Image (cartoon, rainbow, N blue to C red; front, top):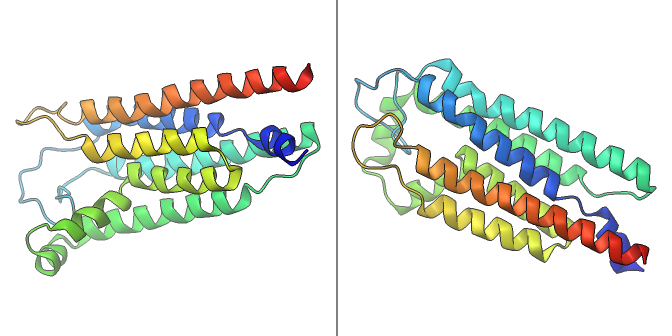
Length: 211
């Protein structure tokens, strides 16, 4: 009975698809929402000091909208099934991470010299901090919590695959304005395929429980 209730409560395929849409939606913003970087690169990850607001503000707005959609999805689903859900901690963490990421980006761009003096040459710790506070990193951390809340091994496997893709994806060498594209396609592709796979698994499980 407990396993059946947990299975009915799971709906992680929707957050995965929502985050995939947000990840792919960042492509034109990153490509056309930044000015040329004619100043030295400073801070964690080397943020360009003359980045334009569209590229900076896309992620917090997009993530907050995605969390609003995820909240609507789970609340509507709970009302339809008559089952409670523990989605509130996940939504709270997601919103907090989005706000922290925004504060980190604003501070990095506003105080490039301070970060350069503080961290000097990028090291392992600064690389880890940069990854965790990146938009892709905040998505991964939130998905880890959701996998724990739903007790979902398939979601945990998809999240681990996403984190591996995020850590292994690098920009193409050179000065091409599309150098970021392979990493975005890889990470977004993992989220998209994972969402489709979990949706199919959920549909099949519902079919089995109905028999």
